[in-house]
Length: 117
Image (cartoon, rainbow, N blue to C red):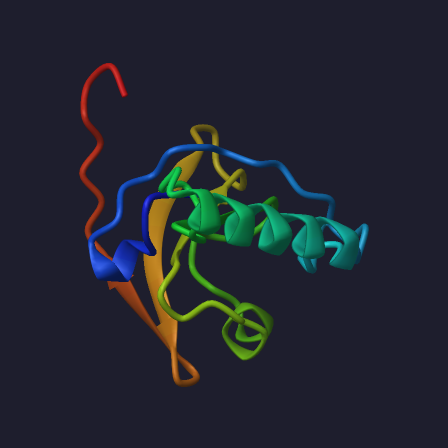
């Protein structure tokens, strides 16, 4: 969650883990109950002016492939203004890459990680 979607200049505020409905190491789909809860929390935050009511990024891992969106990731991306952070666990060292997924295409985004963040 964040102050606004990453594409609109927002900043991240909270990491909220969600369950994988697919229960598979090959496919990721946010559990509908978790997605509903996040939407309710986002709307409540916006209504109270807390400023943490937007999907800033969507994070998931690829256990056996590189940190690049799969065709399934691209086809099922419901939040075009949220950054997609993919973590690959395929190598000896985890790899993190960021992507915009919009209009059926994925475009890599350069990530800048601040020390101490």
